[in-house]
Image (cartoon, protein in one colour):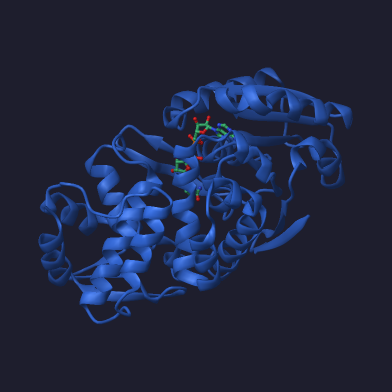
Length: 358
Ligand SMILES: NC(=O)c1ccc[n+]([C@@H]2O[C@H](COP(=O)([O-])OP(=O)(O)OC[C@H]3O[C@@H](n4cnc5c(N)ncnc54)[C@H](O)[C@@H]3O)[C@@H](O)[C@H]2O)c1
């Protein structure tokens, strides 16, 4: 088992990573939770694959369990679903001494995490992430949220889990679209902090080769994220490095109303274009954008920006919270594995975007 301890101001919490961990989840939770009642929140797809297995393991360890299944998909990260979840928690008479398990991808993690952070002013939360994105990113760092009709993640909080249990074998049932999507984030970690990870990712010949090593990759990514989050829990400095590729990526997602491109795909295009900009500004080693492009192609992720109104992208970027006056903080890489934050004049960004967008 790989262990990572994430130090947070509210206390530290462990991330456990082990193939087959879900089958032993009852025994593992027994070691860290002395109560007897557990509410498991999951989505309809994950429930089909892993709902019963989770409940069985918890029951074998003597826990009384309650299962709440929401519809799979981003639309469940809503107040409507949240109210349904609160309602079930009340039906089950869940109280502050009990725990909530979020079993699922980023949607369940964020929504059930927000439910845990708010129900009865906060109930202990355990994350069992089941997508690659959730295993390397959303389950680590304590950000939980729901969407509003006017935008994603607009209501949320920072709420550290009691523990995160990662079973990489769960990724075997994930379809390729979501696996590639998560690889976008994995590639990001290599690009911003770890050239060795980046080079290793370039070497895998096929999906099987990748999956055979995915536990180690997840460990590396979680370690990078944990280090960054420890330095900057509330997202005001160092944590911004995690947004590499996200400024332009978010603008693309938003422009297409979150329908055309997945998060990983949008970030992929964002990583390539921002690296190319870095090269043009003389801040990034020439050839770095080609390395990014090559790895994105290898993992079936797009790199070239789509046809899009340049002005719309510029406006979205300008409204981004990282924007300050006539310049913007952008996350650039000097070379693979070395990232930094740079304040860049907005007109330079605009000129560049006009040049590269069709
Ligand atoms: N909190 C954070 O720091 C953070 C960071 C990044 C993204 N997010 C959020 O994460 C969400 C996206 O998460 P996601 O990409 O995991 O999407 P998701 O949770 O919708 O999962 C993707 C799909 O895969 C299915 N699935 C999940 N695990 C499976 C498995 N093991 N086998 C088969 N199918 C499985 C789900 O049912 C769903 O249909 C977004 O809402 C985003 O805002 C949060």
